[in-house]
Length: 287
Length: 173
Image (cartoon, rainbow over all chains, first blue to last red; front, top):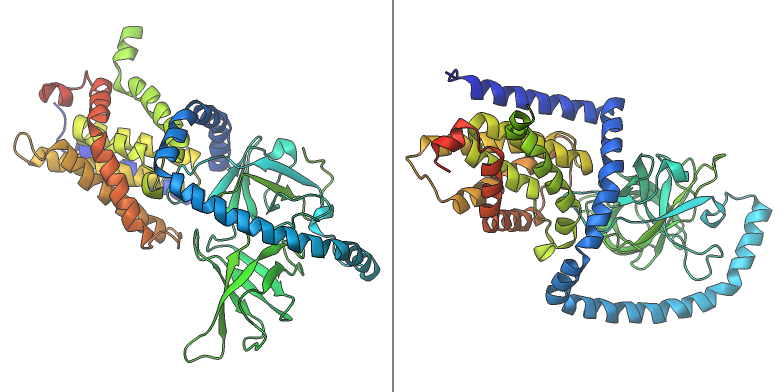
């Protein structure tokens, strides 16, 4: 006959086991990371295969419930593309001048010259509270923890500039986990060249703009629309990666500081291909 | 010997949990009602509590929670903790009620909603600062509603898993 207190003992043991696992994970214990990487390497490709299998179901669902959203998004993207093409035409002539000035002033290597490994972003969001995205490449292709991740761009930067998306926080042989810039634990040293100011940007959550604390807190030149880039000094990110644009400037009540919000330059919820940059450069050829 | 293993609920639980993990990574990740991802592991956890009782239900919920924690970027062990506690409470409440208890769908809805809230609170305690937002209300409602809608196949599956156990036998499944 079962002891009446046994279920209670069982749940206590399970709770203690869970807390132990949480603590080990929080402290970055190697065995926990190793097990997680191994499981991810097994179930990652299986999940991809299952996604391909269920694609007809997904298409029917999105067609039935997402068609209007897609139409609106398509129209908005068409308008943005027309504007971007005009900007690119204007910027094309200045890129060569910038490269020459960089060489003359011995400035840090721009992102376009860094070795990079580009990978597909695993489709879908398997969790409501994921602050990360998963890539279909990992250490076997030269990706390492700490690598900054940018949106896909071409080498000349003529048609698209690299936009900072996040940083690699976990990597297994064939998968990499990227923490997005909107995660509250992420902090980025930024510069706002047109205002001549610098600061620290911090994420405030998925889909939310970043908060920027300025070095010069009372800056009359700060205004919506200014481009925000990484400043690269003593930073884990190379310089001149676009972070976003200033979306709001407000004065903090009762204080001299300005509260600056920055809208990421890309839709972090709809990434399909990104590139992990080797920064600082390593002696590993990325795949 | 093989027949004995095949009758073991823990052996039967393995393919169920593996299937749930694959479905969570594929179908649930892309078919998202109102922009919310349904939680299949939570569905299994609450169903286990309803079907298998306090002890076995909590263990099955722990396994399901740990399995999804291993493939997601959420804190490892958090879902295991939340789901095992919720399964235990569900089984305890069901046991304390008179025969029949609440309808399964109602229990599934309430337990799922409670589990999402508990998970969010625990995640915040363990350092996640972006979980307790207004979006949590929509997530809670959609996850609870989705689980309530599909609870019958989940209950049937868990009854098959725990078919040879006294708790299921007593309930005359």
